Length: 201
Length: 135
Image 1 (cartoon, rainbow over the protein chains, first blue to last red):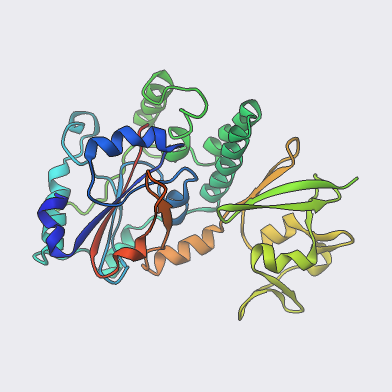
Image 2 (cartoon, rainbow over the protein chains, first blue to last red):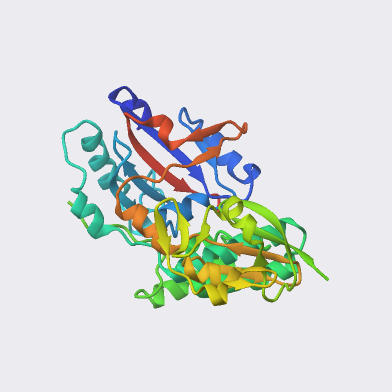
């Protein structure tokens, strides 16, 4: 995808929302990226962009303006059975935008699709910051209370609820996650795993 | 006996001396250096922008009340008294306003080799920003 479009004034920046470079390394090396492949241990990007799950993709134009807000897209259709999300639709739209064949969204459409952060989400992020600091200082037991509080404040924020699992010794692919995913399926209105934009062409 | 509070904020941290961990204060003269705000008769000011604040609640004998300060700035303040650490988060109002302006917030993060990259390095190109994780 990148190779195909890089001569057309297009760049990809990938950011791993992980606790260490060691966590992100196998993924980055698997992709052997020719683009900036960054690591965000402090969850700066979720804070700045209101990101509540991964993968999240955002389009930014030549002038540094948001051309399409937070959306869900996978690099391939390997997980389509589980997620119900077709990566082809996003790729097709992206190709058209990069080549100038198709529009991104108008500014008012971008605004209409943005979900701006709430006070609770920001408090949850502060609790996560505190918990992560305590955990790195060797106070895992005391960090737990703050991880739990963060999850209560923003139950839909998977960068906190699932992203904290490896730090807390929980398996993000295991039972704790399955329980979360099941709850999510049962309560689609308040908590769901993937929230693609509803502008499907 | 005064304690030292570690205040996590804006991606970094500061050590501040406080008289009471349950009601932490920040020295008035450290406000501008630490958080970029200045206390004026009209309120808390940063450049030309000021926000109102109840100064009788804010100004205490041993400094400025951190809780009142956080409320005035609409920033979440969460604390762990046992370990004398607090996190002052970003205001949802500030973050929301920045996103609603549609100007993509700039950031600088390291790659695996520790080399720093910024979004603004890519100005002039269309950018696909992808957040992912191993979890």
